[in-house]
Image (cartoon, rainbow, N blue to C red; front, side, top):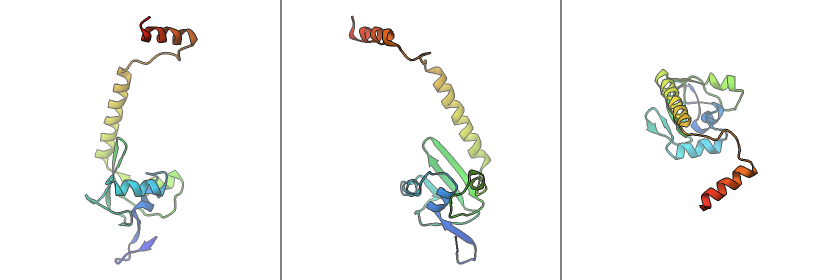
Length: 133
């Protein structure tokens, strides 16, 4: 952790993302920042940008989008309970992610799935059906 010009504690963006457990490795955090998946206060950032308490981050990870406000800084990755104290997710972000999860569940429920894994006889019947026998 370092102090910036105002005497406020700050840490590199890639280290903070890793310590807050948004990414499993620092390398993944660096790639996400360089790929434009992380915005700081509404603008793109470099992995070396200093993050301070009060900064607003938008993190896009797979199909999920997190909007968080930095509450604390840490350079070391600690337990998940400690990582949760480093940020606060906005209520709008939390609701949007819940709605998207419900939509994904509904879409998955609409797709029929087999009740079991096919056995030898089932595989042979499927093979014959596909061949047109």
